[in-house]
Length: 430
Image 1 (cartoon, rainbow, N blue to C red):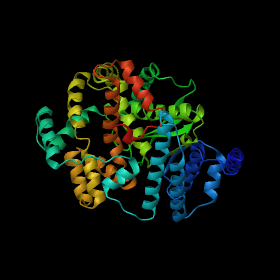
Image 2: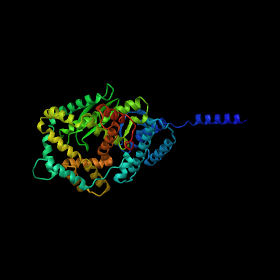
Image 3: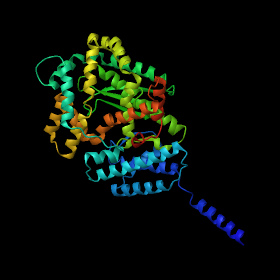
C-alpha cells in the first residue's frame, strides 16, 4: 500500500511538472529582453544595442505599454528569477543569474525615474550601475592642482588657463585627424589580436560627426560589426587618438560587444546578450573596461614610444615635447573624479549651472566650450559619468588582483579577456 501511494505521489508530481514545467534562466532571459525593448519605447537612449529577433522589436514598437504595467512586469520577472535554482558549484550560471537580477533591478529603477521618481546622485548610481561613487572634497582637487602647477610652463593666469595654453600645442589638425586616428586603430587592433581571439570578419567603420554631447561613441550592430563616431565639434588633442581607438575599438567597446555576442549569445544561447540597456550595471563594466583597456593595450612606456615616434610626426607636432606632455597628462588624470563631483552637485541641486561650469573649468580643467558640452552630457546621461572613472578603478583593481604581483602581459590580457567575455557585474569586482 505504501509503495502504491509513493508511486501515485511521484506520478502526480510528474504530471504537474509537465503541465507547469519549472521556469529556467532561458525563460527569464526572453522576458528580460522583451521588457528592455518595451522600456525603450519610453526612452530612445535606453536600448543602446539590439541584434536579436526582429519580430520582438516590431512587437515592442506596436505596443507601447504603460510605465506602471512595465514596473509590475519587472517585479514579477524578478520574483520568478528568485525561484530559479542553479548549482552552487557552477560559477558561470551563478554569475548569469546575478547578472539578470541586477539588470532587472536597474530596469525597475529606470522605470521609476521615467515615472518622475528622483533619486540622489549616489542612490541613482547604486540602483542603475551597482556601485556607489566615492565623494571627494574641494581640498582634494586643490592639492592636485598645486602639484600640477609645478609642472606647467611658467606664465600668467590660473592653473586651468595655463593648462589650456600648454595643451593647445598638441591639437591634431583636422586634415590629419583621420590618418592619425586610423594609425592608432591599427596599432591597437594588432596588439589586441595577439592576446584575444576575435572572429575574422569583425570590423568597424569610423564616422566624424557634430553636435553631440559626447566625444566618441560606439554603436554596436551585431555580427561583430560596429560604427564608431568621433565628435569633431571641439579640438581633438593628440592623446585622444589612442584613447578613442582603444576605448571605442580595441580592446574597448567593440571587442567587449563582440566577445559577449560570440561567447555568450552565439555559443551558449544566452538570449539576454542580444540587447544592451545603457542605464544598467553592464555599462560600468563596459566603460570601465574600455578605459582600463587603454593601458592594457598600450602600457605607459610603450604608448609614449609609439606616440613620440609615430603619432606626433603624423600630426605634425613637436615630438620632443611628448614626455613633458604625458607627464602633465598623468597629473591631469588624477582630477578624473572632479567631473563626478560636478555632476553630483548639479543633479542633487547643490550647484546651479554657473557653479557647475565654474567647478568644471576650475577642477576638471575644461575650457568653457568643453564645460558646456559636459553639462549637456550630465543633463542627458546623469549619473552615467561614474562609469568612466569608478568603472576604470574597479576593473583595474580586479584585473591586477587576479593577475598577481608581477604579472606578464599575457596573464593580464587573460584576466582582462575573461572579464569582458563574462556576465560579471560591478559588485562582483570587489
